[in-house]
Each structure stands twice: as structure tokens, then as C-alpha cells.
Image (tube, rainbow, N blue to C red; front, side, top):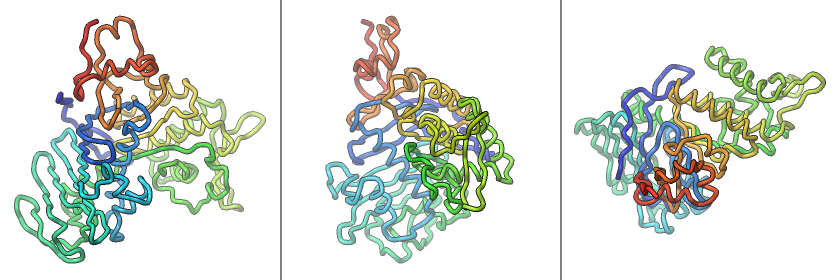
Length: 417
């Protein structure tokens, strides 16, 4: 398999505190739905492919890592099960594992470009009706830091022994239903473990719902959480208000950028104010003779606002499903321009999934991958494609994109005729 070689450097700069994050180079998955193998990533990765190819499954796996790290610890016995049910329905592990084979283990792993990797294996424990981590391997900058195995054989609520940090054995009090390395109360003073959790907590995942965005009063309430933009973008009003009124100068700068970009794209003045009598936040566009509340914007404008907020409030990785929905090609151009700037200046990493021929035409063959039957194929067009000037969008629409993704992962199609 051809490896993508990435220069080792600091990658990903948080606008808030200046911390840096390395780039994800690969995601390893076995037995999760139809996914199987290693998925190589670039600074910007655009994934195309048919329905059922595995794009959403990849979204689910990567967001599971992040949500486990942000949860911080085993709040309840079935934390992993609750997260899986939120992704695949009431069957949880059974709906996620390949062919609903409860005896299989799901393997999920991440590799970064600084020789750091984390791998997690999940198993269904029949007698307890519980999904548990049966193995974790954490290598930090080339040094093995943590290996846990055979967790199925330990007591659920007691202390057990594990290998940690150059063979030293310590005792940990934790529940077997939660990954040790991702639990914030597990040796929080350890720099390597803390760095792993911070990396995963810096990821952001979105599948936006713009049709009903901010149409109801409750969506504008001051009582809704404003820390992170939710996966569907439903708390956009609260996040914008926090950025605008924050004592943090970097957050104020983000607000000013969003305010400016929306004004340029719509021709109006974007304002966010408070209605104290109703206890709501009031985002709106003001024009010379009228104003439009956010809930009644054209869907494309709503989508662009959500995208901008997602991009500028992320720390290291942004994964967005079908960003092209409702957006005019001019807005897509603006969005991609913002993403490229943030990738180059702040080191943000992007993953987009799409069915849009217009959207993929904004990227190069090196940035676009084909996801089909659970495999991610990197494109390497033959000379004949370049000679006829075939765009990626045309290749996608006609099915010829498969000609650029023949063979094994990353090998591409090298024919000359």
C-alpha cells in the first residue's frame, strides 16, 4: 500500500490559546459497518461516492473518538452503548458491527504525523449486555505509553493492574465500559494522555439542518449552551452571542470576521442583539428598508453562516457532511477559499463528504477520494484524463471517476490511453 508521506511539523493552531495539533494521516477501521482497512487523509480531504459507500460510517467512527474524549469519564455504565445508539439506532453495537456479528471486535485507530497513534478495540460482553473496550494501544511520539488488554476478565467496578509508561505497573479505578486513555480522571497530570485527549476534543463534526434553523423562540433562548456549535448547528444564535460579547480578544476577532463575511455575501449588515423582555438572542440582517431575522433567511445564507462559524471556532479538524446543501456556487467558492486560508495559516484539517459536481471541481485530484464499498480510494488520473481536460465533476457525473481509482488504495489508474 502506498503511504502518504507528510512533513513533520506543528499542525493546527487554536485561535483561542495558540496550542498546536499535529495532522491526522490515517484512520484504521475494522468491522465497523462496511468499513475495512486504512483511510489515508490529507490537509484537505474531499470524499465522494455512492449512497451506502461508507462516508457517514467514517463520520460516525471519528466522532465517537471525539465524544468519548469530551465526555471525560464513565458517567454511566453504558457510555459507549449510548453513543453507538445515537449513531446507529436502538441496536447499538449490533447495528455498528459488520454483519451484526456480536462475536466480532470493532477496531478503530488514529495515526498522526508526529509518530503518535491510538487504537481502540470494542467488544460486546454478552453476559452484561454491554459494549466494552477490550484493548487500547497508545504510542506517543514513537514511545509506547499505554497498553491495556483482556479488560473483559477484570472486575467492572474494582481496581485492576495495567501496563503503563515503560513497564511500570499502577492500579487504576475505572469502569471497564470506558476507554482508560480517554478518561479525564485517569492520571490527568500525565502530559501524553492529556495531549491525546486534547487532540480528540479539538475535532468538530457537522451535518447541518438549516430548514428550521432558529424559526422557533426556544432555539433563540439565552438558556441554551453556547460553548460548542452543536452537530446540527441548532445553537448558532447562542454561539454567535458568546463570540460577540466574549472577554477573549480572539473570540471577538472571530465574530468580526463572521460579521464581515456575511455582510459581504448578502449585502446587509449582520447584527446579534438581546431582547431582554423575551430572554432571547436576536440575530438578523439589516438592509436599508427592512430586516430579516435569522430564521427567515434564505437557506443558502443560513448554511454559509453555519459553515463560517464551524470553520472559525474549530481547533484542529473539521468534518462536514454535504456542505454544498442549499448553497449557490458563489457561496461555495467563498467557503472553500476560507477553508484553504485556515488550512494554510492555522493548520486546520478538513474532511468534506459530497455528491456535488460543482463542489468537487473546486479541488484537485490529490484532494478528492472515492469512497465505495467501505474503501477509500485516492485518485490518480491517467494522462488521457489530463489531455482531454476532464474535470473531477464530469468524472463524478459520468462514472469515469472510477477509472481514476482502480486497484489498491492509493495506486490509482496509470494507463496512458
